[in-house]
Image 1 (tube, one colour):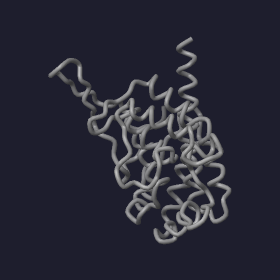
Image 2: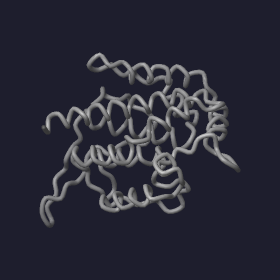
Image 3: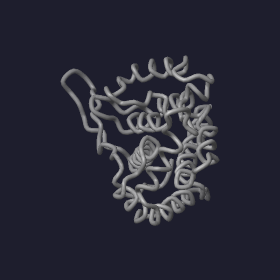
Amino acid sequence: MQAASPDLSSPPAPDAARAVLSPGVSVAMPLTAEDQARADLYALAARLLLAPPDASLLDGLAHADPIEAGGGDHQLADAWEKLGLASSVMDADAVAEEFDTLFVSSGTPAVNPYGSLYLSGFMHDTPLAELRADLNAFGIGRVRGVAESEDHLGALCETMRVLIAGGAGIRRQPLGRQKAFFEARIAPWYGRCLDDVAKAGGANFYRLVAAFVAALLTIEAEAFAVEDGFDD
């Protein structure tokens, strides 16, 4: 769905998942280059949305290879280039302060990137319960001690990475299930959320993060729509 992603110090996707064929028999299922790229970009999106980048990650972004535009669509390539340029001049402490200004507050943060809030108007509402049922079906559970709920946009990007690449004890999911999850749990609200991030007071580096994540998710949405055409 997108060009191969550069090697960064972001959480890597596994090289292969184990697909059980019958009791006691399993076979390694290597990721295609395209799916590895998708998984890596989702991993980076999750990392940037859940916590501010440290100096090492900023350096990795600053020196990353460009992403080639595919099919004449330059949105992701352009967003990636701008994110890399900003990373080359940003100080990690300044980015951490910006992250706290946008997403962390003793009162109401500038942006609350949670699906339940955007879908129903309330935190921890019915959309979160429905999401947890989906995750349970995949064998995915919330890590003990993690503060963010599963409907955080960063957590959902990490879920997409796992659906694409698999994880510890979790099988990779076929494209149809990835599509169904994306369209039900991410597509209806990610655009509004990322627009809020980009327009929030104090957004500087994270305005570019929002553009990168929006470009990634838009390409995914368009690619899934193409799959619909093939299914007809």
